[in-house]
Image (cartoon, rainbow, N blue to C red; front, side, top):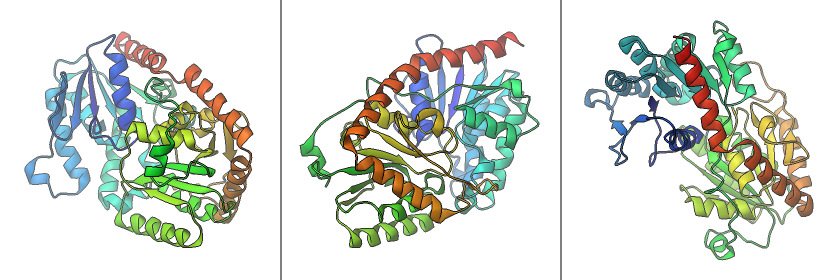
Length: 394
């Protein structure tokens, strides 16, 4: 099997990259997996990386992506099937299927129709990425959704797809690598006071993560509460400036606003999550949210928006709390009433961070749920079952 992906270690910047790395590791115990990824050469056996062709180096990112996909598709001959992840590799999967007459399976980590803000980043390339994704979904032998919420979104966005071809296989978490780490010295080195309650956010600076809403909500939290932002990799200069300005204002109004804008090591991140009174996921679009699983694995209570796949991970009143949201039906995820969403987020965060005993119980329950429902061996087995069903049907 050839697995096609943009992200692969060490070049990982989001949840899709984490998913792919862990899935490959789990699958290789059962089948031969060849990885084809974007970027610089890798040392890992069975892994081939591809650079953007020179003439496309300064082209629109969507065209540069196609330049890589053409190389992947050409090299996929001999595979029994190809499995692509995200629109970046979907064209490679579709082309390989036609060129080599092999099945194409794809996993949806997000959907272009539900990310209209990508036009800010790609310009006219957003129309190209949307076309690639639609063509891939409507012709794939099977599609894997990372949550039931994502499955509903797929069928709503692409009604031409046969629902029987869309399978749910959750994202997972490596419970050996993600777990509680207590290190007050490291927290202080990072600028975090281990003796103060904290709300922690981890994520890319992108519209879907809802960071501007969180920065507004924090203004209403008790003065002793710290905000720890592990946030970087902005989608555009505009949102980077918007977030930086909002953080600067917030830092002028209260103490304990810590912004870590570099990529933290897993040890550092586990330490920050373990110390969190609560983790917050204010996303307006989230197919599942691996970051919520990472927080739960570290024993942190989670406060998340009740949208997408988040309610399938966060059990309200058991592993954390869900914040209600009514959203504009235009694919953007924008709250119908932003002020109400901000107020509800602030109220819920205040309730959880002000009750550390209950937050601790949420965290313990979250770790148990991660262990029982989201281990990678189970997810690899479910993925193999999809492969087998597709191959058996040809």
